[in-house]
Image (cartoon, rainbow, N blue to C red; front, side, top):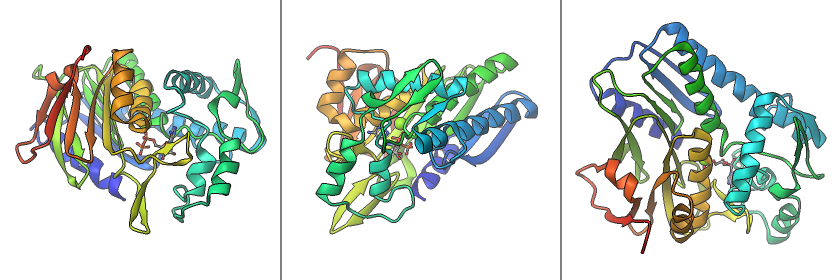
Length: 333
Ligand code: ADP
Ligand code: MG
């Protein structure tokens, strides 16, 4: 799977910095490959892994006994604290992004075959029917009890890794671990600094060759999430269909965006926005950033333009083998 290779690459890059970790854990979770490298004990690393696996057991849409699985099956469920917390944050982000992020697109994602990998192009009437039973604003969350309209199914896939990264950082703080890099399948938490005081460098995958990276950002205390059309897609009739759905049309996003990386202090926000800005495309992304400014982003389009907010540009280094056209976005213009 493409994503697997891409994540491996980032790890090669990180370990290429020449430091060995005091403790690490590598495992598969949330349908991706994860690696934790921390300056702490083996028990600390095991605690982080256990927390991520526990959260996966609550959020997985494909597991009927998870919180989300029960909600999808029964249309109502009493949720654990964490699921209620993530659902509440997600609903806010769905609203704030004008529905570019919509955690109710699962039936559409399924119809295109992205869940069982039996890829197909659904017909217009099928999509219209499915669109009628989607819409994050039809999800009710009251305390820890959630309710959905009939036919609805939720999918926290666009935000779960970011939330898990936030919780993993909390565990590190509780355990007094101040330095580490957590790669949760393309959502990377850079905690503290390297022992020599330098910032962490997080590589961003080359969509054309996921065994390479086109550049990196130097960060400390940030979560860097990337969503790319190269991560999961299929081709049919000479056209490529990616796994990020435009909730307005029910179709895979096709606006010239190839990948979006978001850098912020919150994993949930970085993960949610990497998906949402992908759907918005460059014009929407610029506008959104100018009205929020609590994150930075890097967007690669299919014309080899690399759009960077000025804050992202300050920490970005392009690999010498690449000649993307750099386009810096500032607060005005
Ligand atoms: P990845 O999980 O590959 O890192 P994302 O964070 O961008 O990528 O999340 C994409 C996943 O979220 C898809 O696989 C799908 O399950 C779900 N999804 C697709 N489109 C949307 C959307 N517009 N809003 C919310 N979730 C989405
Ligand atoms: Mg995401």
